[in-house]
Length: 194
Ligand SMILES: CCCCC/C=C\C/C=C\CCC/C=C/C(=O)SCCNC(=O)CCNC(=O)[C@H](O)C(C)(C)COP(=O)(O)OP(=O)(O)OC[C@H]1O[C@@H](n2cnc3c(N)ncnc32)[C@H](O)[C@@H]1OP(=O)(O)O
Image (cartoon, rainbow, N blue to C red; front, top):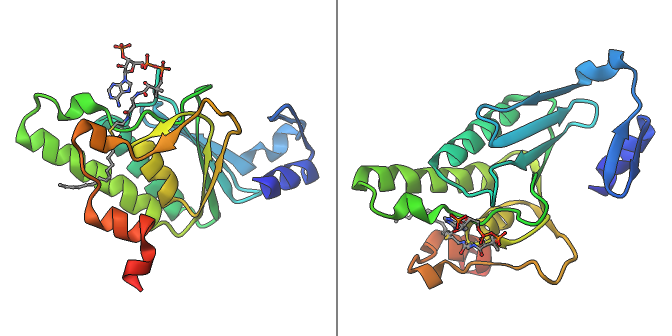
């Protein structure tokens, strides 16, 4: 993140209170592009730095439902295919929630087919992040329970906003969901793999 900001300064961007203001001539704007499918995942790719900023934008709490997870996977695929993209910062567009995790309503009163599709999308999200060729950074700017924690763990680096009110953790056992073996061994106890 610091490197990104340094690069921004070199290119004529100035920052104040965490915001970055652009003073670049319009002619250089081709170096940036933005995309989103359904506006739940916003991506801004800066070709001059090779860094993409991905913001979850599903108010009020950035729930990870099937639609958002699918959009996330598509966005990751697009970035992986961009040879100029070297790094990814994953964050939230909301002020105090990174993501409230999986939408528990996706697991409640739904058909077995739907639940299967949903969990496949959860697993795909993890695979896309954990297996990414990009340098991935989670900029955790708010509460991050359950799958929010899973997302952060799947990134190469994590930075969390310095606010004692925000919590992060795998709290899903409180809902009767058990973290799968591969998650525990890969991310929480990697020594078991060596
Ligand atoms: C067998 C095959 C295995 C394959 C496995 C593959 C992968 C699995 C890998 C790992 C397992 C990970 C499992 C992860 C599970 C989860 O993520 S479970 C969800 C955990 N999350 C929570 O417990 C969050 C609970 N929410 C909060 O604590 C708060 O909402 C908050 C985030 C602190 C924000 O607080 P606040 O700003 O005050 O907002 P509200 O509480 O008022 O919430 C606003 C509305 O959003 C609803 N909501 C919040 N969280 C959820 C949620 N997780 N699901 C559904 N809905 C949620 C909340 O009810 C409010 O709704 P209304 O406005 O009242 O209608």
